[in-house]
Amino acid sequence: MAKWTVGILAMQCLTASAFLTSAPRTTAALARRSFRTSSALGATQYLLHYDYIPDVLEKRGPYREGHLDLAKKLIAEGTCLSGGPTGEPGMEVPSGALFIFTDLEAAQLFVKEDPYTQNGIVTGHSIKEWNVVVQKE
Image (cartoon, rainbow, N blue to C red; front, side, top):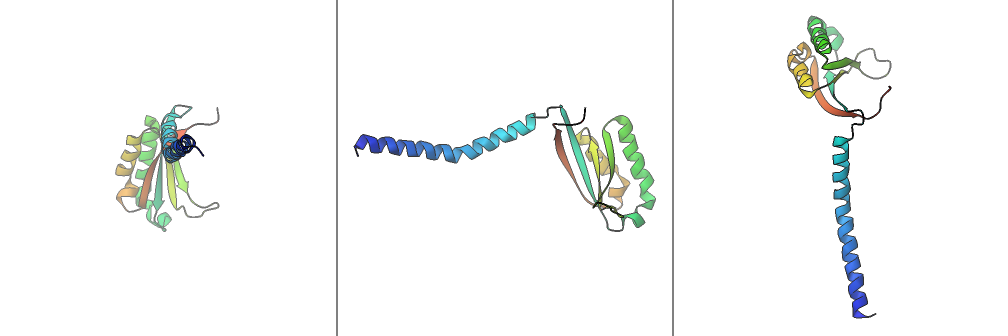
């Protein structure tokens, strides 16, 4: 094989190697950028998930009215869309709750001011950004 042929093959291998090692990062970067900008409906929302204590039904009584009043206040203001208990299908005792907010600050405020979080009914929570792409019209 001629020296120039070996040189071309070596260059092709180096080029392919560089492409293969950079492709996943490039693809991941494009996917991340696409995720941040792809809310087709322009409706970024925030999902607040609560984890409850196992005996929530017995312990929530003194705090339930304040918890519901806070949720209703934020719904009236338009920053909370809905909320309610979550658990396994056919649940008798909820294991947590899910709330949908229109902005992050409202979700954070709810966690901070909720009587359930202040009094140990909630054992953990998470807030996730949700980019709505499809929904019923």
